[in-house]
Amino acid sequence: MMDLNTLRQFVVVARLEHLSRAADELRVAQPSLSRTISRLERELGTPLFDRAGRLRLNDAGRLFLGYVERSLGELDAGRRAVAEAVSEGLGAVRLASETFLTLTEPLAAFKRAHPAIEVGLQWMPAEDMARRLRAQDVDLCVASQPIRADGLEAVQLLDEAVGLATPLDHPLAGRASVSMDELADQPFVTARAGHWQRRLLDRLFATSGLTPNIVCEVDEHSAIAGLISAGLGVSLVPGFARRSPVQAPLRWIAVDNPDCRRTLTLFWAADGHLSAAARLMRSTIIGWDWITSEPQEILVHHPVKLSG
Image (cartoon, rainbow, N blue to C red):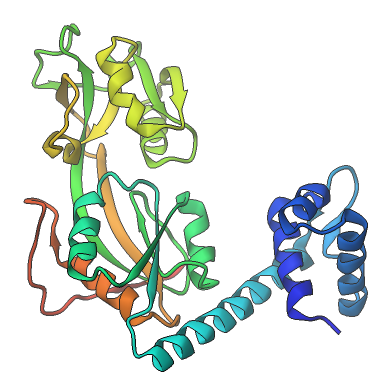
């Protein structure tokens, strides 16, 4: 019979699609892990992976993975709920986001107000958020790009213009706005594929029938401003960055395109258990004044249920 250990090992193998790396992460011998997966497949009566070439999760495996993740998530949520009830405490909260630069001030305010609450932060790409929320791996997610999936609720936090950041001595630095055609040959410093800034850049150029001239892709997003000010290129930067207390010497120029915007949204699982700590953080984030960067009292919020 399948047990929790078997299911947890299956989830890791399914995520990595690589037996040796999964064995290293789980700290088990690869032959033992291979036998565990084979026993699970025999019990289910079907292969869960395609083994032609490299290991690949097949349709049956993807179907089973969804149920396993939700089941394990419910068990973990049950453990947290019991621990919260027994201790009569507020518990812990796990927040995932594509970037934490925007969230620094509300998180600091939350920690000052609730110093005893354990806060776990995790960087996460937007495409993983719906699955991880439904599996209850995290409590809350903040994304700067749309997430369309069943079983989530959402509250929009901020809708803002995204502009072009240039060095101070750039030929466009004195302009109030620029068109997409004027950006066709500009060297762009940007985040890697999947990040909201990169997706926005690719989408804007594709809609205009253009291809961006990307000269540098970075994983360290905080380095983008420094690379721009060093004269290595330009980039799309949200208006929120202009209110940062620590700013690089840059010019911010409006882009003459109504779709050059970012929408910051808070997501959580519609049917998942939220600890008292998670509910407090949700209220703090929703109640934050994202224009003045100050807390404000929110008496009621209206989440929107999402469907794929």
